[in-house]
Amino acid sequence: MAILPEPAFLTYALAAGGGIKSGEPDIRKVTLAHGAVLLSFVEPPETPAIAASLWRAMEAKGFFITTDGCIFPHKYYWSSNEKGDQHSGHVRSIDFFVHRQRLQTGQNEFGWPANEQVSHLCHRENCVNPLHLTIEPQWCNLRRNFCGANGACSCGQQPACTQRFVTWNVFLEQVRHGKVGFISRQDEVLEVLSELRNAYKFKVRQKDHYRVEDEKRINRKARLAQGKIHQEQQTANLKRKVAKLEHKLATVEADKRGKDEQSDEESEQVPEPAANESAHKRKAPESEVAVGATLKKKKKRKHPPPPMIEGPAKA
Image (cartoon, rainbow, N blue to C red; front, side, top):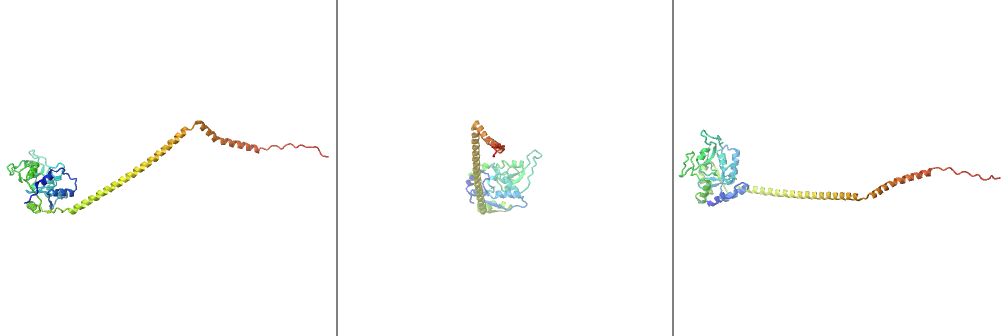
């Protein structure tokens, strides 16, 4: 069986980040480049719509498959990722395949924590293989820790653990030293996951399965980016026009204030006698009118005719 170079997954697991800020096509490109496989599961009967939606979102980004049957999603869905989603991959898996409500009873009669949790039979906290998961009270889940010191399950829980308990960091060291391998060829995947395929039908997709959809998303993203640039340009042009109008208005107002101030200064500089003289000049026409009227009255006055002088009588 051909095994991918272990460092590929290790490089992916240890890389900085782990958020989901990148678009789905970019995430899928990264996971596939590190050996992920595209699986498409048939939706089980009576699966809630929200559970199906959450699973499909994770499924579309690809899975890393180990030689012993563990399935790891994109690390945004890892429970070990502090920056990951609150709906971790194993929770999405149990909701999609089992979709049973987990009871929250608090404590049992002995005071043990009894809220139901999703336990990993493989002890790999980021695995989403539904055959490696079970729902049980928290005290049972805790009891599985440190199980299998001698190699076989020793916690006494049912269903039994599939392998010795190790922490996630120890698991990565096992990957580093080649103790755990990863597969990506279709025939290998179908062989390793044959038990899972009997329980839940799935298909192994080609790596370019989402090519058309990814191209549409990339083109849509480019159009949105172009539209955003055009909108920013329009906004910048509008701001320049508004700034130009504001500058012009400020200039006009400044000129008006300058003229008003100049007029006030000229009014303050006019001497008082000149002002009196001006007032006198304004009254002069009224006096002239009065004198003219008086003269007209004198001209209209009638004087008596001169007395007649009689001369010597003629003989």
